Image (cartoon, rainbow, N blue to C red; front, side, top):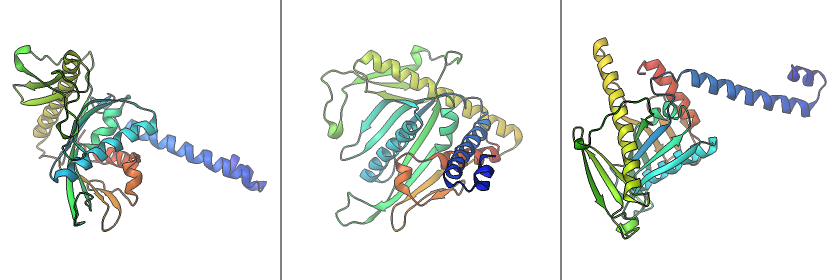
Length: 289
């Protein structure tokens, strides 16, 4: 209505303002549409995300750190609260792994499409000969547990090891054995926590992470059982899902949805909504969730 009025009166200022409002409205409608697609059992939960470096040596560790910053920037852009539970620094640069939460309803539903192997191709800043390097990092996404969840973990099923927290290059962060490693004996799941100041705080945080990982394991087992009942084969979850290419050209491409952009810097700065939206639509089309 306002656009038509501005055009009739040849008012460029009002027309520009109306078009801007239309753009914002279109984004809100698209966001609402995406939210309606998040109907999985745990999609409305907050998210627990683990990033780990894989093949590629120091470049992979650096790539894992780039992904950690990317997700934290994405959350910051949207005003979502985050908390980093654990960061394991690599020897030369980057991180071996990191675990953090995004404290926002539906964060799990949005970020669960990020699960899988991410691939980076670039001229390595750590190679004296300036050679191109391909490196990999893995992303796991879990729903945060709530009081209504019944995740019973008997004390006998957990082995607790304590060790001294360490920073880059193995440098000791403190002088006490406050870091905690929890091993869930029946499944072999291992959780390490060292960001809190006390051993007790690290153990409590570690138990939260372990519960979330067991909850996601339970969800995946149910999903696999349903696929078996339907006579379906496996799906592509956990496979290589996105490539970030910085050389010889600039592109980030999702290998499942074919969504791609030509500005990796923006993506690494947290501009990943297009990939999330495309992934959520793709998942619904696949009927995985």
